[in-house]
Image (cartoon, rainbow, N blue to C red; front, side, top):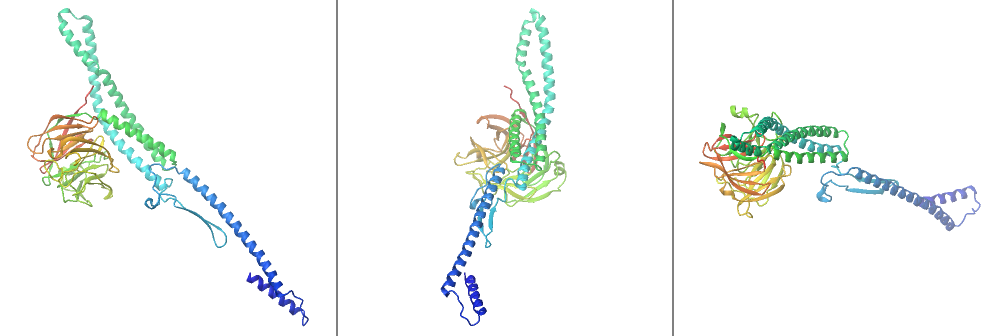
Length: 515
């Protein structure tokens, strides 16, 4: 406006100079001002019109960005739990979407996308790696199952041949038996009637052994598909593979319960592997370690210690003192530690906190409190030693044995998620925790010993599949008089024990009940 008025006055002075001394015929000053105002208003209207067009263009661009964001969000269908929004959610959601005009009238549109979006290559790779780890763990279990089934199938086929041969002989006797042998014939017939139902059961066992081989092929196919998923992944591909892995895992677990499991009927005489350490401690191998990896993990004492020894093999553990030492961030409590799939699980000293410690990175990957569990020698085994919480592994996964006030100090058994340490399901028993010498899990059944010193036996069994218990009598040779650790390894099908400064192994016999 000021600029337009100044131009008008300059123009008036120029006219006066051109006409010399004659009086200039200029419009009055008010007219000049009015004309200048009209010129300024036109300019201002043009400027407003330009800004209006700029805003319309900005809104149009903003709408385009909004449509793009919606399309992008639709194409990045989340898999797994959704990220939280708001302050607690961090950068998990679409946090900012705005548009504004800059000083020149241009449109400025702002979109802040999730940093950890599931469609990003890093997040996708992490999900694929998680699935791949699961499949590799299952592959190792399948190989173990196949090794057992190859051994057992030979026995089954031999038994089947003998049964069929016996049946053929019986048919011959049946066709031409003499009356003088009627009683013998009737005895043979009754025995044959008992054995005949075993033949279809043996056929079913062979079919199960074939199923194990199919599991192995399916796991190999899924592994190949997961490797390719890094290159060309879509949410549909991931969901499909996730469902395949979950289905395979469920069927494999059911197959292992049927083929690899049974009722504990015998514990062999112990083999003394080594004499070392104090009176109390624990030692173990990883049941999910890959083939050829038989590292030994050794933890001396039951409290106020943070150092875990790693021996490169069982042979090295037996013959040398060469080891690698891992320092834990917290001391452990008791002797109920386990190593599973490369991680050490232990109870933090003077707490009911469970810790998952990655032995490769030497970092805590997860910790969680075991709600209501007694600790600090509240509900220990009969030998004491801060053994309130005992972690163990069997064919079904990771377990915790402990006691609570709510269950009157009796044993509570919980199956845990090995990734999150979340309790998946719990069972309450009627057995007092303080009266148990030691305990271990085999095939979903908790076995409890009657003591830790002197004549020892396994005398109590609680089956989780039926939520029932029974009293049994399976002798346990207590070679050195003080058992402070007893754990089952499903890969070796053996019990690991720590007995008065000796590290022992017991082979076990599982009886398959055929109904």
